[in-house]
Length: 118
Image (tube, rainbow, N blue to C red; front, top):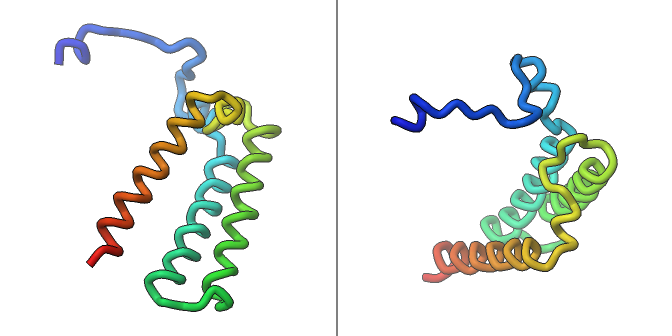
């Protein structure tokens, strides 16, 4: 409560109005990331929850949408975004990439144990 009450810190480049804040949002990156991850989740969920074969359109169509969405996300972050959600230069450095992979595999193991072990 004391920090909230007494510390007044303005970040450099922070906008003042709500319209300026909305202009700073990376809309292209946000939408393409949601499409890519949503397609990945839908495709894998259709395969595992519904026990559909890989050849079913309800499995491979969302997976294709996921690939297209994630490629569009990478292109939007690389060429269009002034303030990207994920600066792609982070993926070329060893430590952020290792942290990303460690978190991914830890989450995958936890969800596998939670949902697939009987």
